Image 1: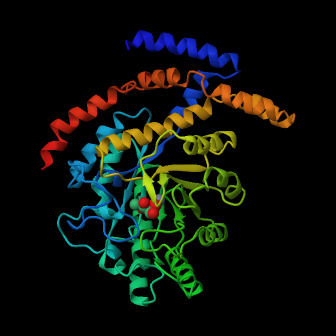
Image 2: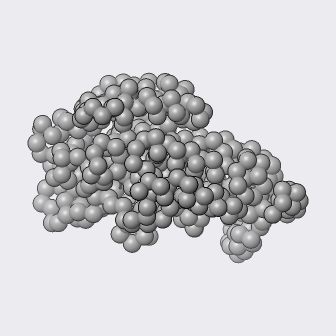
Image 3: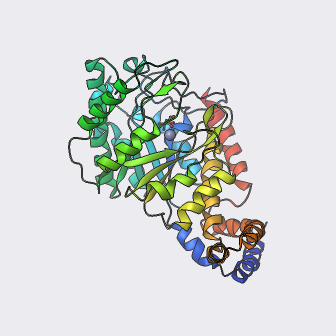
Length: 421
Ligand code: RNT
Ligand code: ZN
C-alpha cells in the first residue's frame, strides 16, 4: 500500500475513533513512550555462550530445529538489531547472565563481573536503548540436581547466592552506564518432580538465600530486583519452591518487584487480573509476557484475548509507569528473528488497542449498571479500524508496514542466517 493511502486510511480511522471520543494522535504519543524489554534468549534457544551444550535442565525446554540460530554474541546482536529495525518505537534489551563475554576465559557464574558485559553495554548505548538483566540458575553442573538457592548443600547454595550478588552488581553497572534503571530478575527452577514430603524446608532455605543475596543496598536508580514465581516446570511438576505465594509475600515484605510470567499459572488463570491487586501492595512489578499452551509456558506471544487483557489492565488502571513489560518466549521451530518481531509487534498492538479504547464510555455503562450496554459496546469497539492506526504508526516510526517486515526477515535469512551452517 502506498504511503499516501496509509495516511488517508489513518485520517478516516481517526474520525471513526473521534466519534467514540478517542484521540488517536494522543494514543500514538503515549504508545511511543512505552519501552518493551525484548529478551535476548529467543535468538539462540536460551543457550548462552558459556559452553556449546546450550539449554540444559532448569525445567524449561526449547523445541525445534529451525536453522540459523546465533552462535556467538556478535551474531546475536546482529539478529537483535535486525528485529529492532522491524519494530516501531524504542525498546530495551533483556539479557541473561549466560550471555557474558569473557574473551574465552573460563569464568564461573559466581565470579562474573560488569566487564564481561561491557560489549553489550556499549552496543546498547550505541543503539540508545536501556537494558535489563537476569541471573541464570540453570544449564550448569551446580544446578543439575534441580536445586540452586534452595539446595540442601550449603556450598551449592553459597555458589548461587554469590551468583545473585554478582548479577545485582552487573545490573547496577548496566543501569548506571545507560542512565536508566536495570531490572534484574531472579528465577530459579528449584522443585520436585513427584510426591513431596517437605514443602517447608526448601522454602525456608530459599528465603534465607534471598535475604543474603539482597542484603546489600543497591541504588534503585541503577538496579531494581525482581523475583519470578512458577506453578510447575518440566521435572518439577509436583512442587516448585518459588511459588506465587512465596514470592508475593517476599516481594511485599522486602519491597522487591514481583515478576508475573503469563505462562506460570494454572491454564485458565490469567495475569491480567493480578495486576490491580498486587500493585496495591507493591510499587512496581515486572511482566514476563508469554503464551502458555497446555504444559508449555513459552510460546511466541500473539494478539489474543489474554494479551489484550494485560494491556487493557495497564492502561485502564494507569499502571504504565509502574509496570516493566518484558517478554519471555522461545521457539526453535520458526525463524527466531521473526519470532521476536511477531511477539513484540503483538505486544505493541495490544497496547495500542488498549490506548484506543473509549474507556470512559464503557466505564459509564458499568457505573450505571448498564451491563447490556457494556457488553454491546465492548463488541462494537473490537471492529474499529485498529489496523489503520497501527499501519500509520509503523509508517511514522520508519518500520515496515503490515507483512512487509516478513520479506526483510526472509532476505536476512537467506543472506545471513542460512550461512551459519
Ligand atoms: C522460566 C522463566 C524464566 C525463563 C528465562 C529464560 O520458566 O519463565 O523467566 O524463561 O529466564
Ligand atoms: Zn519468565
